[in-house]
Structure formats: C-alpha cells, structure tokens
Amino acid sequence: MHEPHEPPLLTATAVGRLLGVDASTVYRMAADGRLPALRVGRQWRFAAEQVRSALAAGVPTHAAAPAAGGASASAPLWIDPEAVADLVEVAADALGVAMVVTDLEGRPLTRVLHPCPRLAPLATDAHLQAACAAEWRALGADLDLVPRFRTGTLGFACARALVRHGDRLVGMVLAGGIAPDDAPPAHDDDLHHLDAEGRARVLHALPRLAAALSRLASDSGPTPDPTHQGGTA
Image (cartoon, rainbow, N blue to C red; front, side, top):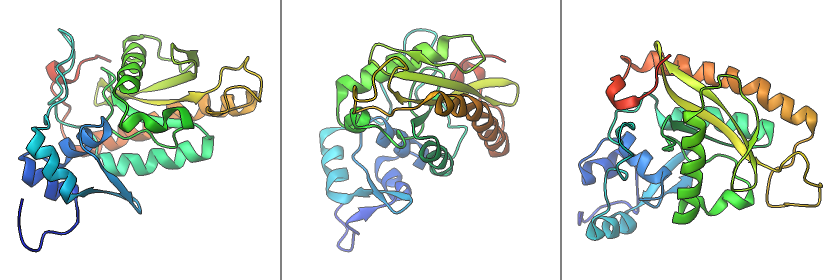
C-alpha cells in the first residue's frame, strides 16, 4: 500500500489486487457504500488514501449475509458492472428516472444512476441503504412478471423488470425515485415527476432494457450456479 509512485486515484483492478478480490467485488463494494468511489468521466476511480483507510479499518469484502435461503453475497457477477452501468445510465437519463441493477435479493450490482435528490445520499446513508435494499428485495420476491409501478414505504414509485441468464432469473433492472401519480407537481420536489405518458414510456422500456441485459449476461459466460443466484425461470 505504500509504493513510492502510487497514483492518487486507483482503478478497480488495482484496488482489487490490494484487497485480494476481483474487480467485480470492488464495484459491488462501491455500489453498496463499503468503499468510497469517485466518478471520473465514465469510469469509477478510488482515492488511494481512502483505500488505505478502509484497509486499516478492516472493510469487509463481502456484504452482510442474507436471510436463510437467500443468494450468496459472494456469488459471481453475471454482468460487467461498468458496461451495464453505462447502458442503464443512458436509459435512466432518457426516461427521467433513477435506475439500478440488483440481484434477486436486492443487492445492488451497479450504483444508482440518475438519482433524484432523495436518493443522492444513498452511497453514505446506511439507513437509506437498508430501506432501499428492503424495497428491492420485496420486488425481487414478487412473482409478477409484468412491470408495474408500486409506491413503497419510502414514498416514491418504483417498477422493475427481471433479467435472465440462460433459463434462470438472476436479477432486476429497477426504475424508481418517482413521485406517486397522485402527488401534486409542486409536492415532493426531491423526486422525479412523470406524467402519464412518461410513466407509460418507463413501463414500455423496462422489459426491453432487461432483455438487453439478459443478452449481455448470456454473452458473459456460463449460467450462475442456482444455489448462489436464486430464482428460477
């Protein structure tokens, strides 16, 4: 950690070498707030001093264990987080919503993209992280295959479409941070506001985006072990 020519900002690969994990685990740690990260252009970078502090504090390289029967936090990723984040970010900006890709247990595989102000503190707010994870986990447990908006306990609407890897369901792409459809335009100005046409566009786009992620997953390698990823077709 104390190389004389160590750059001030490190790549995920470099951080992974220091932590003894692969780059996908580093992205997961950044997404769930265990490791501070900076956005530089279209890439994530990590401050060397913050990585040193995380190592000294004994930052866990695995997320907290899920409930019995849940997916393993150490399961291999079926996506390239950087490539997927770039694709989903375009969709989120175009649709005017916050988006994130998670596994079926609600664990984020990308950062939240195009967040509304209410979700902006997500990377550092443990209470908000736990609340979002509970909402996402509930959506993953829902057997309804048709995307539809639901207003959760955090007071905003969210919809999701399921992602497949081969013949198995492995994750979700979620659109959220949206003011409930009965909220006045001047109310909840820390949320994204969509009219009926905008909501319809989101519900139309989600399955198409999930299909694109499914194709990326299929191109990335073998179907994950179902004992790790959970969910069936």
